[in-house]
Length: 172
Image 1 (cartoon, rainbow, N blue to C red):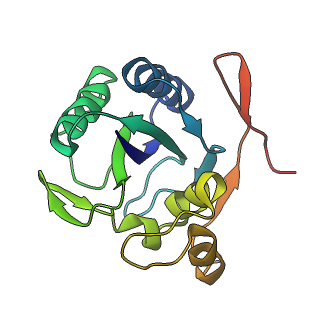
Image 2: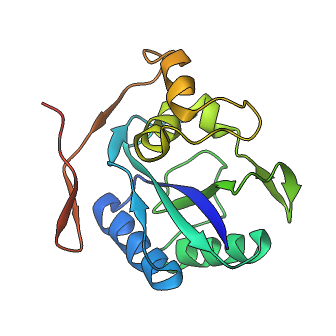
Image 3: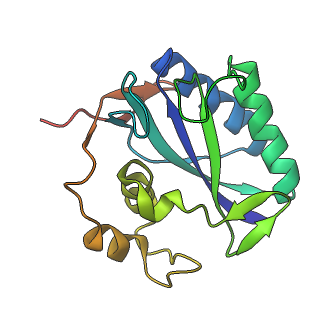
């Protein structure tokens, strides 16, 4: 079994889409480690704010199989693939890490470069895996977050409930 971290983002029907993705991930993979949920402005295009989080889970599927499952979850939740690469979306689920795999495996680049480039990925990953080591950088996610230019991207924690429990609280 591999341990996987995925990022989840949505800026269309945000709360419904994120909840639906968590339902499907739990159904497919069992117990989930879920970060707080953050809101951020769209990066790379003008659009509505996104909800973003990171989820960890154990996975018996290959990277290619996992990628297909995640694409199916996106599609089942109204993800359109005929628009621009950077645009609004109901659901975007990306594999961040798959154990310590490095390189292009089954068409998936690991670890995903967004980890070190985007606060909306690095901060929630740090929240649930602070001591874990980035497979390429060989630094913990806490160290990477401390070194990150935190003023470069604006994001804030939002209240989010799922499955009868509070996943995160709004920043005060």
